[in-house]
Length: 594
Image 1: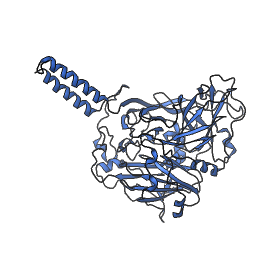
Image 2: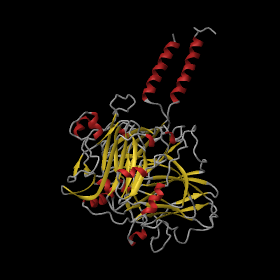
Image 3: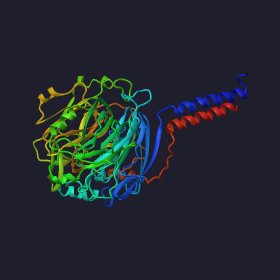
């Protein structure tokens, strides 16, 4: 064959084209979602009420992706108030622009749409998303996130026969707007009207406690099969105990970390926490079985009616569930709950998002660079308004998000002066940030001075839970730390009159929200942002998105709302890859036609 012939040139063109197509599609896949967030009318507890749904679903759709995939979610806000969605536990490596909280994003106004685009870089596990503004999570708007292992990294257990997501939550028939008004006025949240399981009310296990006509969740299973149950407490402020009648819960993962595999008969799941269990259908199916979520650490008979009950139904079941519910732990036994939490260990030999074992990161050998002892206090009046505090400061959200102010070098929006301990001064409202050291190693001790369990979450990271105990933390408490296999997660509980210690490797540049997960505490000011600034120019850090919404001082930069984009569900390649791809094709065509 003559190399200069048209046939050769055409063959060469198609050979190179095939290589380019292969290379272009070999990168990390993109998945696209188009969501409309709106109010729905439903009756989870037998009374019609307004909830927040996504694409007509309550709870919302599940994002089912794989490590390193790119997720594009176009969100249309059909509510009557601003909206942001946050992705609980997703780390957004070098991309806090997508975090969906007021410190990083201007809200999506009513009637507008905004497109999130982020990568689930180096993560696996069970997470959830929810609306982060205005107490909206109390009305729903939440859904699950599943990040599967890549095929090259085996699971540290047999492949389950099925995957089941369960959302448990305390629930009120009062609207989220009514609840937030109560909280603003210093009115404590009352006993919830019920506990929902997957947005549905309880099975009528007791005719005196549960009204007739309530729709309840049925989980259909096959005998002898093993299922992975991913359980999320997406509620407002209630710790819940989860259990399945006559079945063991084999804990295998929590919030992106594989755990040492241990059987539990029940598990306390605090607000904002996620666990996954393997449950084997090993019973004789003489009847259906109860799935129960009941409140913990409550001291009123009014709570007796507040129990979530679903049904586990074997395909060969011989009858309905009946009789008493499986017993919970002692309602007031916080020692049981703390010891259970301490028993959860990191599986140091398992690979997760990467092939190397989780335990190859030896966090216990790293020198701590910054220490913060963070003391909470229940709501109190500050300048005539009810506020909650961390180290005497109630966070005041500026009209311009911190991340935007940092990007445009706007002075006076925030201060990097959050105290590392409670100061001897009156409480105040302020926009005070923790000044984190990039690639430093931070120790945070949460001291709970409230009368209820509080849980705290940090965006952008998984931290190591190294210790917890009752009483006041002291320097000597470090002698009790677990420096080998403390579990890495993003939400931890702090018991009343107790402390919890965490360690964080600050390797993810950005502005990151540290908050109370209990909605009443968070809404009244129990949050702070951690600024982790890379002093060097990092070309891999994601720049300001082209579709950024501007507000506050930067409102004049806001363009008219762009037309809504309808995406297909097909994988795609990045814009830059498309551009290079097209230019190369044009050049090859030109060369082949010479």
